[in-house]
Image (tube, rainbow, N blue to C red; front, side, top):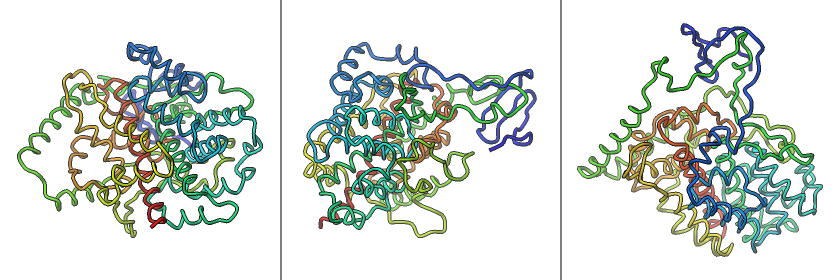
Amino acid sequence: MNVSADSLSSTNSYLICNNCQKVIRKKEKGMKVPRPHTSGPSSFIPENEIIEATPVDGHTILLLAEEYSTSGRLDNITQVMGLHPHYLESFLRSQFYMLRMDGPLPLHYRHYIAIMAAARHQCSFLVNMHVQEFYQMGVCVEWLNGLQHAPQRLRNLNEINKILAHRPWLITKDHIQKLVKTGENSWSLAELVHAVVLLAHFHALASFVFGSGINPEPDGENTNSFQQMGVSNVCLCDLANDNILEEIPFNSPSLGTMDSVSELEALMERMKRLLEEREDEEATQEEMATRFEKEKKESLLVGSGGFQGEMVPTSKVSRFVEDATFGYQDFARHGEDNPPTFRAQDYSWEDHGFSLVNRLYSDIGHLLDEKFRTVYNLTYYNMASHEDVDTTMLRRALFNYVHCMYGIRYDDYDYGEVNQLLERSLKVYIKTVTCYPERTTRRMYDSYWRQFRHSEKVHVNLLLMEARMQAELLYALRAITRYMT
């Protein structure tokens, strides 16, 4: 991608990059240098703000990490999630159980499946973490040379790995049958459920890593590591012009942008109005079905602009990827026969998925259910500077919008609320983090909810991660159920 003179629109002393839409100020000519990597756990959140925002029981976070960490240290993911210690505990417990406790799959299989899942999104942070775990076990290290060196049994997971990562609605009972009836390389249903849980977990965790700008670990440069594919902080516009370009904050008063305080007040007002409308008049089932279809179609218009074609995996991560060009496509596509809507009342986590996964992989259902409920109900009753606020409506809109993009509909939810509560810049961020997280940029993170705390944006990322994981599990577990019946 080249940045030419006509790809930058000029406004007085400012430039706007038509690729990344970043507002930049021209400075005097001089050497062009990239911005330095930020320190701390996140490249999006200043390190001192993570330290200051960490709750007073920070010691509890250290104890949780010591008890449940699979890496043996307080890693960057844990530090950022530590902004929400109640959720962190349920996350670490479930992850520890699926990676370390008794289960259908041997330990080295579990870490290799984590590598395969993370590699679909080129998440070298997670790939590197589990490569290190694999080395420490000291078995089958030749598998780390690439998928072609792994046993056929693991390679057979490639198809459902890529489908769950990018288009989970395509998975069918035929995919399940191929895995459980392949002779010497067959999977038992219990093993397959364990593998599916791992795949969904690490696909979703990759969304959190990119959405939160998680930095590489300090030891990421050792000989066995995989080069971190950094979060997209730098556009070529930073280097391609004869001027050094200084990024202008989004809320810079000199640009006449909408005041972020007014933005917050407008959101508060919309929430209040929606509550009043709920009390006055309840929408019919037909109206709610129509609003879901409208929101599903409108999600087609939301995308992360500036990215044309497929993302090419970095060389070391790509050794764990087959069919690298297979990526996300919208559930509802213009002019095509689209798959039927997944109706949550026909197959839900609470009524169907939970019992199946718990039956085939003992106790994981309880741990996942606790994690889903914790993030969905997590609240501190505030929004930015406002206190005593019921954020239930906002949390539900975030969760249900992710499921809407995956074609999952809740009959009792009015999808008209999504358009009222989620501004376009937030929708772009949600779709990018959820569907192609490797494209997430600092600009996208900064562009929405500018008045909100970083901890609140991390809460958004936790909701997106868990909504995505649950969506993948629903499609996979429904296919397993159909195979079994």
